[in-house]
Image 1 (cartoon, rainbow, N blue to C red):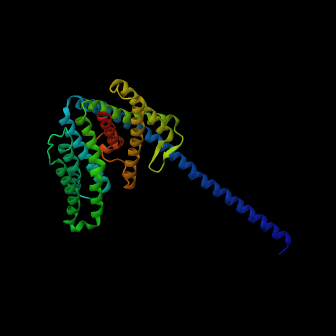
Image 2: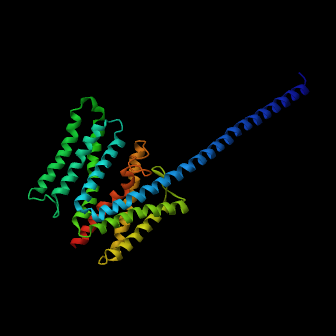
Length: 331
C-alpha cells in the first residue's frame, strides 16, 4: 500500500471520528435541554400548590389561634389541662406512627396510654396546686413511672409474634413518656402553678411562633448559608439569626406588658435560651421524621401537618420557661 493511500485512509478515519463526536455531543445536549424544560415545568406546576398550601395554612391559623387564645383566657385551669392531655395523647400517637409505621393502631394506642401515665399522675398529685395532692403523692408518682416501664416491656412480652419489633415499641413508649409527656406537662403546669400563668404561656408562644415567623421571612429574603442541610435544607443561618431577634423582641415586649418586676437582662436570658431550644426542637423533629422517611407527623391541622409539626419547637422550650418562671416566682 502506498504512502498516499495510508494518509488518505487516516484522514478519512479522523473525519469519521469527528463526526461521531459531534453527533454524540448533540445527543447529549438534547436530554440536558429536555431535563431543564422538565424541571421548569415541574416548578411551574408546583407554584400553584405552594400558594394553595399557604392559603390553607393561613385559614387554619385564623380559625384555630383565636380558639386557642379563648381557651387559655376563659377556659380555666382544668379545661387547659384536659386540652393539653388530649393534645399530648395525639402527639404520642403521631410519634408512635412515625417510629412504628407497621404496627397496628391498637398497639400504638396502648403504648401512647402507657407513656402518658407519668405525666398525668404528676399533674394530679405533685405540687402545691395539685388537685389530688396527699402525703403519698411522691409514692404514687413513682408507681406511675414503674407502671409505664413495666407496661412497656410486658406488653411486648405477651406478643410473641411481634418479637422483632419489640425493642422499637419499647424505646418509643419510654421516649414518648419524656419527649411528649413531660413537655406537655410543663405546658399544663405553667397555667396551674402561677397566678400569671396565662402571661407566661403567651410569652412562650410569642417567642416560639414569633421566632418561626421571623426566621421564615429573614431566611427567605437573606438566606444564603444552610443551617442544617441534611435535616432541613430550607433553613438558613440568616433565618436562625432572624428567629433569635424576633424572640428577643417578643420577650422585651412581654417584660413591659406583663412582667415589669423582672429585669431586662433576665428576659434576654429567657429569650436566648428558649429560642435556642425551640430551634433545636424543630431540627430534632425533622431528624426523627427523616430517619423514618416521613414528611409530616400527621394531618390533623390542615396545611400544617400534625400536632408535633406545629408544637415541636414549643414543647422543647416549655420546660425551660417553666423552670425560669418557677425561679422568678420563688426567688
